[in-house]
Length: 111
Image (cartoon, one colour):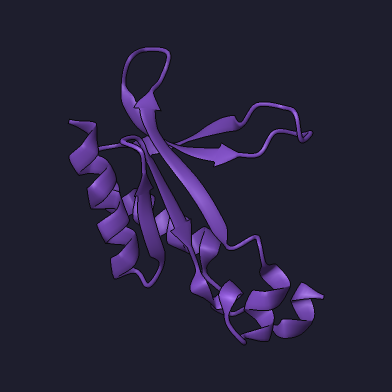
């Protein structure tokens, strides 16, 4: 059941101009490729234009999309923040794209 949802989110992100791949059966890795090219804003934001999102249940057993954030130290476990219900793929993709996009960012703001 989760596999099609994860693949659906990856496809929705690709439709928004992001590179997206599934990682295992529960995670999507989204990347704004501007960080990999010659775009000066993208280069300044690198590696910040990458985001992992996971599909997993909350404490009540509801399946949600979760932001996956690095822990506060190198040895700390990842931290998870709810992104939204797995059934709302479009809203999740819109939110992820909003975090990873470069629209309206002046190069000076990234220095």
